[in-house]
Amino acid sequence: MGSFFSTLVTPPPAADDPNCAVVAAHSKATYDEQWAAHKSSSKLMVIDFSASWCGPCRFIEPAFKELASRFTDAIFVKVDVDELAEVARTWKVEAMPTFVLVKDGKEVGRVIGAKKDELERKIRMFVTSSSSS
Image (cartoon, rainbow, N blue to C red):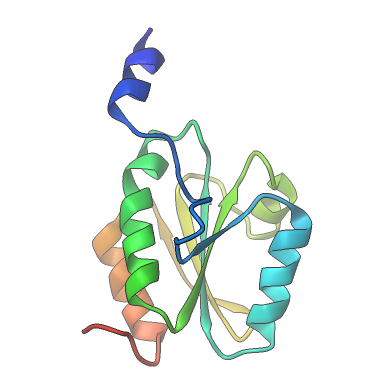
């Protein structure tokens, strides 16, 4: 019964919005495509490992989208750990949400938990420039 009421209060994830700057990787092929694009550029890639049933993941999702719209020099990808367990294992994700920051094919930072301020601070450290300061 509690989950029923939480669905009334918490909107469902909307990372599939075509106007959103976050790419929702629902398949290994989509993830691999994003990874290949990242490796051929010097951009920061921010990977949001989350799950549809995870309350904190749903809580921070609007903030993650807002960061993606502000930091246009970075690539933002959302991975559902239930859909792409293999990818989550590759990055050794053990808790959700986990945000992995990758540059030049290597992990440069990680934020575990719905910590918007810490995530923004780490993104600022690795993005060469942002659309707003």
